[in-house]
Image (cartoon, rainbow, N blue to C red; front, top):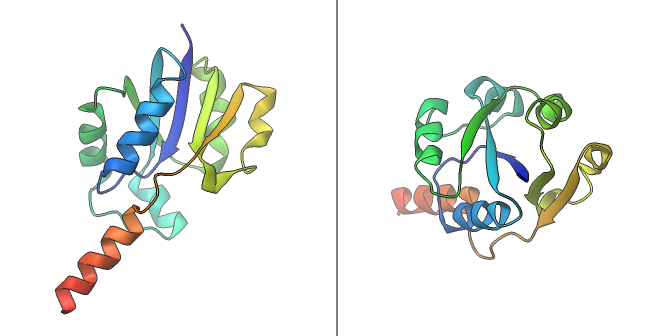
Length: 132
C-alpha cells in the first residue's frame, strides 16, 4: 500500500482544499492529513475559525481522507513520515523547496494551488462584506 501525507490548517474548507486532497489521494492508496493543533496555530500566529476537533471532524468526512493526525510542531514531519510509513509527502506549490529535506525519507511532491481561492481570501472578503 502506498501512503501519502499532507499538512495544513484546513479551516473554512473550500474547493481548493478538496482539489489538493483529491490530487494527494490520487498519488497513493491511503491519505493521512496532519492538521495544525490550536496551540500550533497560536505559535504560527494563525487564528482558525474552527477549533481542532471541528476541523478534524470535517476532514474525516471527506472521502479522500483516510486518517487525520495533529500537527504540534514544525519539526515533527520526519517523525510522522517514519512512524506512519509514508511514501509520498504532498504540499501546495507555494511551499516549493521548503520540505526537500524529506526526500531522504520519502518522495516530496508540490502540487499547484487552485487559482482564485484561499482561506485568507475568504476571510478578507467576509470581513469586507461585514463592513460594507
